[in-house]
Every structure is written in structure tokens, then in C-alpha cells.
Length: 190
Image 1 (cartoon, helix red, strand yellow):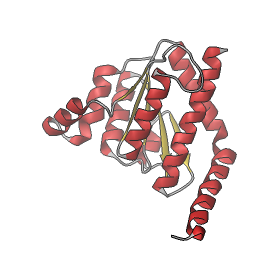
Image 2: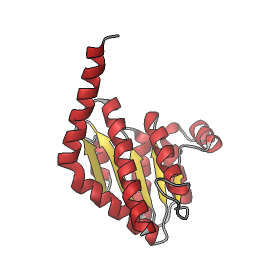
Image 3: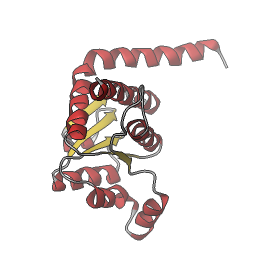
């Protein structure tokens, strides 16, 4: 392994961070407002994604329920990626493309916010979850990359990280999620 390869990866990461800072700060601020509006209005946050994006969804839901940077009351958040019985029964009985849609229809209500994580924006189960949310009058936001795919056009707020690298996209998705958590924490504890 060469130090040059390590430096190249870190340089690429820093370049994407710079572009996100320059190009996406306004969109991130809009997501902060959506999250605050949802939580202060008595709604809940629902997160979903596949693979590494599922891990990001779970991670961020935990930050709201448990705590992020300061002690505060728990905030209503739920990852649709964590109930293995629901996921496996849904995939087995209905098809993998319905695993999130089914949960959205069962758990989401007007006033909630569905946050979808995807590096491609093409996963059928996320597209169907977004459509179900729209049917129910639930607002939607997506953390995307690589142009955003079709999911970009099917959500209320699309934050598209300017990279085609899934690794760099997921790094930025969790960074954006942490920024939103920090600003929400400040707002609800001030």
C-alpha cells in the first residue's frame, strides 16, 4: 500500500467536501428547516436506504432518538431498515421492491418526513417508498449522488452530492446528516 494512494483518496474526499460546501449549503439548510418543521409539528422522521445507505439511515435515526451533540429530549425518528422480520417477510411474501413502501403505508402519516438515502437513485424499493409517501401526503427528501437518478424527480427535496463515487457519496451523506443533526440539536435546546 502506498502513501500516495492514501493521499489520493483523501484529496478526492476533500475535493468533494469543497464542492458540497460551495454548491449544497442552501439545500442542506432547507433540509434542516424540513426536519425542524416536522419534529416541532409533532411528526416523525422515517429513514431508508439499501446497503451502506441502510447503515446511514439507521445511524441517523439513532442520532435523533438517543442524542447527537448534547443531552435533550428524544426526537421521533425511525429507520425502516432495521426490523428483520418485516424486511424478510416483505421480501419473501411481496417482493424486495415493496419492503419500504409497505412500511411507509403502515407507519407514515401527514406531517412526517421520509428521508431516502441512495447513491444511485434508481432502486425500485426507494422509488416505490417515495410514491407511497406522496400518496399519503408525507413530505420527502433524498440524499443522492451521481445525478440523482429518477428518485431526484420524485421527492420534495433532492440533495445530490456532486460525485459518481459511491464511497464519496456515502461519506457526504453521513456528513450532511450530522450537520442537520447538529443544527436541529441547537434549535431544540436553545
